[in-house]
Image (cartoon, rainbow, N blue to C red; front, side, top):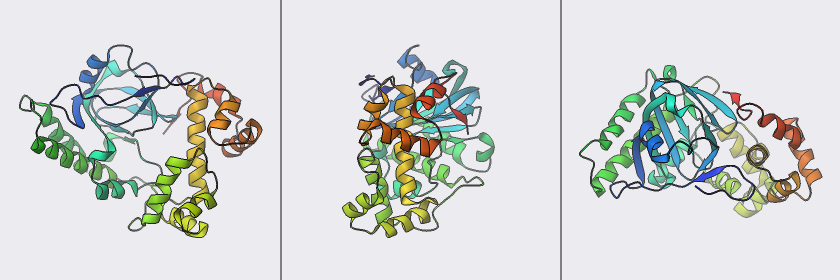
Amino acid sequence: MVKTGHSAIRRVRFLPPAPSVGDIEVNTINGIRDRGGPHEFLTPQRLDFDLLMHIESGTAGHTVDFTDYPLRAGDVLWVRAGQVHQWGAIDDIEGAVVMFGSHTIDDHTRDLIRSRPVRPRSHWPARDLEASPVPRVVELLTISIGPSATERSALHEAALAHGLALLLVQLARVETPGDVTSTGPTHEAFTWFRDHIEEHFHRWHKVSEYADRLGYSARTLNRLARQNTGLSAKELIDERVVLEAKRRLSHGDASVSEIAEELGFDDASNFSSYFRRQTHLTPGSFRTRSRVGNGGGSTG
């Protein structure tokens, strides 16, 4: 765990606990709690891997990028690499945990999953999973942590990878009213655009900058963005910039001027005006509100 700059967010890297564990670790909440120790789960974390939990017993809250999720038996929570999350009463819940890097899922499956809702879903209440095979797939994965899984092998890792891919696909198939999903196969240009936003949002805020780099017109990127997400290309860029601004304001002590510079704005005034247009709050007001109570999350 490493602290960087002014940030109070703990950067957590995936370190296999034993030679028998490869790029996918199947464990329990109790197992990671004992391994991490009592202080590991007290502050906000940004993972460099994905963490998926299936709650088997107990209740607790969990915050992922400013949204609070009440966890109960039967629920699934998926925290993706790069998201900022904060544990609630981890001592009060038990269940299965799967930790993995995005590279463990084949490209085709990953693209299919990513072409689903505009905002990656983090929480599936038990009621949404009643008619799905998700609980049974989780059970299949947890078998791998039994006494027979003491040695790492290519076959064992392949079984985990296929089981994990099946679990993620089945989660992606669980739909709720209001989901915005793609109406067809994801065009490669949209995939590139989405990846470029993640890579360059801290410097490029205009659709034209992405269009020039990708060799497509801004009109094409807008059409593909709306087709796949329901939002314009500019709205997708702004959503990512604002999310990062919120993370840094809420979880760090950097000044507004420093954050403005880090996110590619000419000065603090331009950043403040932009942030207020997007959120209807000044950066200072958001910082104050987000630090009241348990971090200012909203129930989702």
